[in-house]
Image (cartoon, rainbow, N blue to C red; front, side):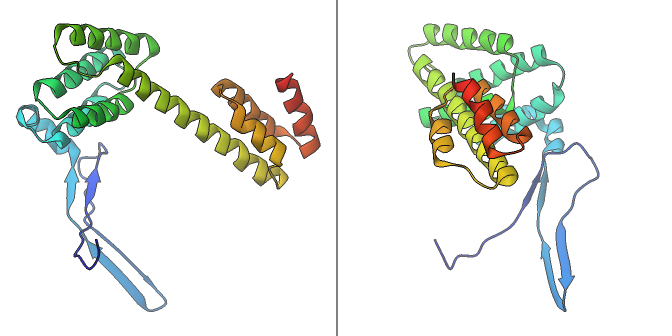
Length: 214
């Protein structure tokens, strides 16, 4: 799409009640740029919870997940209960299956839990599947989501190692890059990051890396 009018808007997810910027401007070398934009403060929707629950708009689910993530900071058992309630609501609102999967991923990434509580949640999902003719999120899809997270974490860790090596030692040798691409254990990559951050030379780094490889 091109030659179409566009808008800028701000969605504010912070907890400062009175912070509501609606403009931006700067002046430099005689040039002045000014922008005025509408804002949405997610905090305001706390008073409209019943309307959010009744809404069939997918964004209502995302707003609820955001609000309950904030409200349950340091209260993970409560977060697990709300997370389950929101996930179950995806099915009850009869969203399209693709919407359910995408919204599930957003809720799952936003409302993080301890491994024990996440396991408890997945047990509830599994039981829910067994009680329905159409599953909410199948075990295969759950595994796919988890694998996607793991792959993303591995890629980020590899990139971080390369960035540290480039910044500290000036290069990322081909053999090191090839080795990093083969590492499939996140804790190993995290250990390599420490080596890259503390090595005084490429030779020292490779020497330490050899110990991990052996």
